[in-house]
Length: 117
Image 1 (cartoon, rainbow, N blue to C red):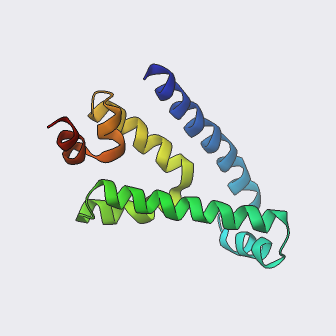
Image 2: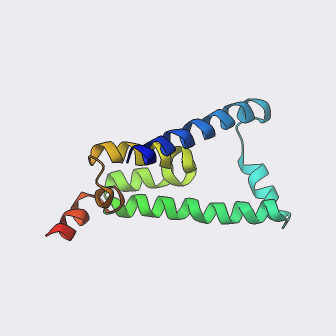
């Protein structure tokens, strides 16, 4: 678990450390550039479509993990737009909240408890 937590911290720091200077140099409105690359039908656009699908799945998993509760529905778009910076912080938080119980991290406490019953 310590190795996984270290990886999550490294991912968060790496993305934050990359995002801040890029945003400062190019502005914070990523949407036009993101969709323009998709419209060009090149490899960058293909990557953006693929990445968008991962973001959608991340948001859907977050909502599902919280049983589509109000909290889950609030966190889902944050997960979708926040990408790996959100997910790394969220997973790190969950590893501490669940005392490193991987089933509870991935499934939520209720589903993990049902596995043990």
